[in-house]
Image 1 (tube, rainbow, N blue to C red):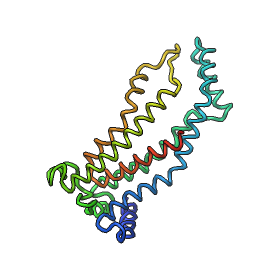
Image 2 (cartoon, rainbow, N blue to C red):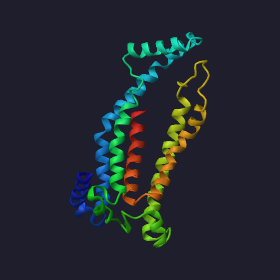
Image 3 (cartoon, helix red, strand yellow):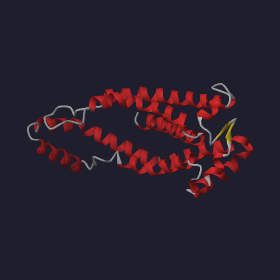
Length: 238
């Protein structure tokens, strides 16, 4: 963990002439973007896997109609189809799962005051008037919503809300177009799937809560990563 902290601090030193007192905040944003760029090939692999699985849906629907009375035969036929077309049922999931350790590592770095002995130095810096180690409640206590630190959070909330609204719209459109792929043995839709599909578009707005309760350094990471994800998915899942 201290290695990552030192890298961010060194990046902040390089950005000092451009961003002055906010160099550490700029370093967090840039470092997060660089990490997301490194794992971008995994995101591309996940997108290819999803497209491959989507292309098989018409044939899977035919198998489902053909073997409606025999769930075990249906399962074998679907697995044989995936093997024949060299498409893994998990081809879109594994790349995303492999990204998670890096994301949790960075989140812990920017939210823990003692991570690796180095994050405390990062959290002592500021983004304009807001300390990177402070939270929104601290900004409210020191000047209120429209205080100098409060305005920093208002700008972050506005950005997160815009990204969440964009993600919400895209998720609604994709959910409406996506075929039903999860079915029970009798061909009926899996119980609870409809509720999950209705809730899914609203998940992006939970980022607002995260930004409000974590330290500002972690909030910058979350906002950068969320914005990157929205743009990346819009490009990969057109």
